Length: 126
Length: 171
Image (tube, rainbow over all chains, first blue to last red; front, side, top):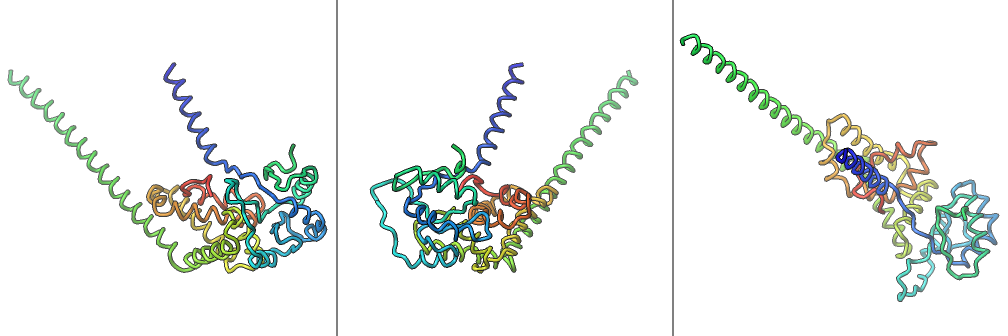
């Protein structure tokens, strides 16, 4: 009886382990507010592309074309980072669905912070 | 007395015959297993050689160049951002890495999985040879595979890469 119970527990533990290793948890995005405000101002251009999800190079806003935006990013001087912080660098490139982009902009509008942290998997949730 | 002796001798012979047969069967089984294992090693090695020639070799090099090119744009880009950029560039045709090459690479790993399932290839050996490469490919090509897979076909497209990645959850 005890043995059966132990076997069952082991099987459950193994299953839990497999589930845990197969789940990829995306890290939170740290986004600069001014980038999001620029996207909001140019939202019509971004939504005019047929792509869904849309890939956006945030510091290159308002350039919508991805390749052009990447080239612009390469030309621009590197953003000065605060090396005293252990925080990861703000996000530069995002891939986001049209619906989630609207949710993200709404979230950004509700916050006054210069750097906004969001969970990319819960952009339209609470 | 003589009958008893004959009976014991007969029984002994029976036992010895049974033992000889059993030992013979064990050796035959071990021989079969050794031969099968050698065949699997040979198949696995032959299969893995395909990855380093022709179109697959070209795809590997294109992917590495693509990763390097995008990483050079800005040092702070994460692997996830590089992977998204690869997907966008491949889709728009701005990359030297083509969709056909991406699919060829994922097909290779799916083929390896089928080879293991058919017991022609040894999973452990293939993993030792390709786990690092599978992790690298999965990390940088997952968004591209998602974008170019047929509706609902992504899980099947990435199955082989998932199986052989050393750590499927990390990138």
